[in-house]
Length: 238
Image (spheres, rainbow, N blue to C red):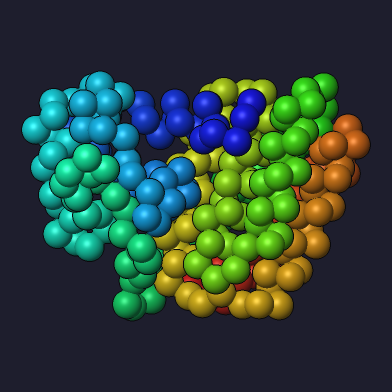
């Protein structure tokens, strides 16, 4: 495992789309890569040819999805030797609060409460390699020192790193899809500095438990962390 984008996560996001809704699914999948922080603001997407192969669609479908997102202000196309399709910096934020039903909010939060503590428990139970341990700590450090608009992206990458370290490939797309929905809601309300400080302390407890090989402690620390996020989500959205 390296500092490059997570292998299992890349496979989860860059996977073939449904043939019946190719354009819509391709557009949604590109948005997901941005919301999850796999392609940061100012960075470029993979080439059209590569995206078409990964999604199992035509290059025309990829071009149309890119045009849609460029028109919506998410992407920009640059020509020339260093050209390509780039995520705009900063990424547009919703101008109005999200409208979320109580049932949908409860469903997403409840699923997260099953997936992520389980991922932390499984990661702590594995014999992690030196590279895996280094990457986990580096993700924690990056989130701890992030400021402003970078925080949520780097916070997300830490959580997804834990999911990948669980060693259960089929878990990763579930966590990624769930986190993308959570991020779409988080983007509708402001970052709270005291909450970030508290989250950083909780991240340290989670990561330390994983690195120490203490599954129950990692599970409990993640549950405590998610309880704070749940309170914020319900406070802003319910």
